[in-house]
Amino acid sequence: MSQIQGAIQVLRAKGYKVTQPRKRVLEALAQAQQPVSPYDIQKILWRRGSHLNHVTIYRILDLFCLLNLAHRVSLLGGFVKCTLGEEEGCHRFMVCRQCGALQEFADETLCREENEVAQGLGFHTERHFSEVSGLCSNCQA
Image 1 (cartoon, rainbow, N blue to C red):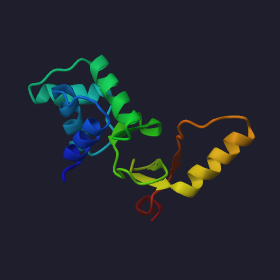
Image 2: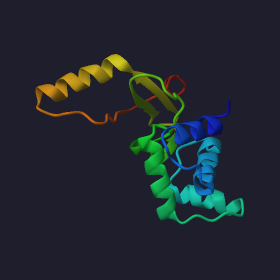
Image 3: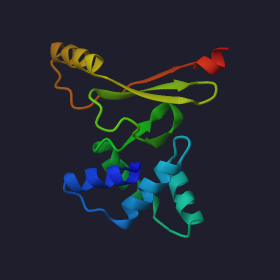
């Protein structure tokens, strides 16, 4: 099953309509080789003869992030498609500061430990964000 078809199934299963704008943003994310901003997505769509305003794209990306179909990568200033699907644990990123390589991973134990720390501080955790900056193995060489 393609990433786009999988995302469409998630949207339907969660009770969301599969609209043309949502499909277009899914396609743009699926084809992107690096994190893209809403404005990047808008340019990609324009080149394909389609137009969506950036506010609509932001709203769609917010929904996709909520459903774990995409993630915001703050260190790189853009959004990426989720590569782990339903894998358990909070999804995290390793970002190479030199070449921009991005590695997504999930760690259920780390997620559980962060929840315990939050509870000890009187917080109820709703969402975890974590990005690690450093050098990938290629750039270390």
